[in-house]
Image (cartoon, rainbow, N blue to C red; front, side, top):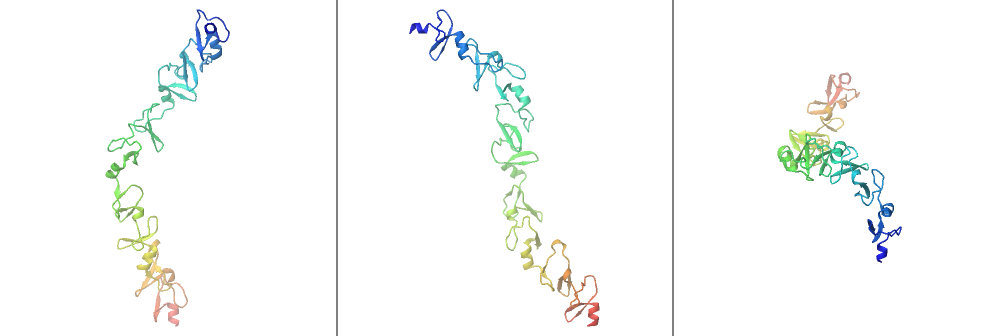
Length: 280
C-alpha cells in the first residue's frame, strides 16, 4: 500500500520528494494530473494546471488572471459581476450597457438590486412609492394619475369622485349626469332600472329614462300612427288643438300629401289640404 502511494497512479513514476495531487484517493504526478484532469480556461483556452487557481462559475472555469470583465478588462476576482450573452461583465459595464433606468430618478438599476416593474416602466424599490404619502407601494394595489402612482387610500382622498347614487368611490370610468358622477352600474333608468351607461336615454324632471320607459309613460302619441313622439335625435313633430303628429305623419286626410309648412283646413276633425278642403 505504501509503495502504491509513492508512485503516480497513472504513469507509475516515483513520487518520492516530488509534488503530487490526489484524485479520488489516488496520487498523480503533476504532469499526469494536468493532462488527465485539468479544466480549460474559457478565456485563454489553456489548461488550468494544478498549481494555478481555478475559478469556476456555472460549470465554466477560468485562470485567476483571465477572470476579468469582457468590456473594460478589469479583474472580477472577489468582485460582483454579471453575465450577458455568456460574457462576464463588471457591474458598472453591465449597468451602462444593459441595466434598466429608474422611471423616477433616471438612475441605473444595478444588477442584484430589486427592480419594480409597472406598465412597461421600471423603478428602484425605494423609488416606487405613493406620490402623496411616500410609502413604498411594493405589490399593493395602486392607481396612476398623470404618470404618478398613488396607493388607493391616497388616491381616493385626493382625487376620487363619489357616486351620486351609492356614495362609494369611483376609481375608473363612470357617467356624469346633471354634473353629478355615477358608477356605470349605478346609472339606471328611473322606470325599469336598466343600466343606461353607453345607451341612449331621455331626461324627464331631472330623471333619466330608457327610450321604452319614456315612450310608455311620458311621450306624446302621434295622432296618425299612434307611435310615441320623442325628441331623441332632434325629431320634429306638429301640434294642433292638443293633437300631435310626427312631421312625416302630418298629411292631408284625403290625398295624403304632406301638410308640413302648408296651409290646411279642418273638417269634422279631419286635417285636409286647402285643395281637398275646398272641394269637399
